[in-house]
Amino acid sequence: MTEEIVIRKAVDADLEVLLAMEQGVITAERPYDPTIKENPVHYYDLKDLMANPKAILLVALYKEKIVSCGYALEKAARSYLDHDTYAYLGFMFTVSDYRGHGINKQIIEGLKEWAYSRGLSEIRLTVYSDNHPAIRAYEKVGFKSHMIEMRISNKQ
Image (tube, rainbow, N blue to C red; front, side, top):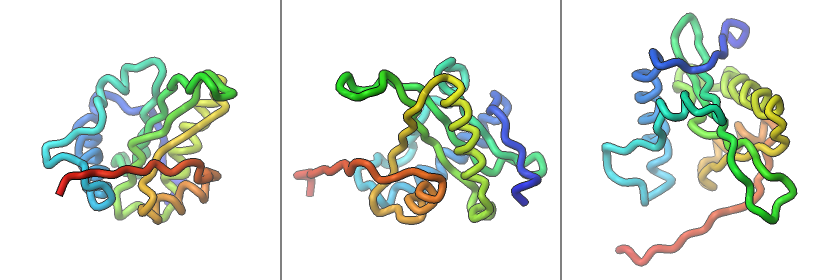
């Protein structure tokens, strides 16, 4: 299957499918984060992301059907780090029937190529600490755990 996958930049005509995939991300992450608001919720301004010259949103197609996506966004690094900017990856999603075929890896490779072509040597992403399948997928492509965000709430 992976040899039949086509990776390309997202276009406005993809928006309806991408909005549905965004809801897939939210549904998948809701069990890991009790602070996500009730629906309707949106994580991303996808039209803005597609138009942003400091970002790229890629989609993976299998037989003309969008089955996976992900973006890279150039961000300013904290002043004390050894790099001024870095690529932040997000909206990593693969339709469940297509998981386990290396499609996410192809998306990440495309995002890495974009980042490196822009001179960005640092690439980061965030993942919920209990989302073990996602963590394993990112480790398979070379990511390493770097920092854990912690929280506390006095809500009942």
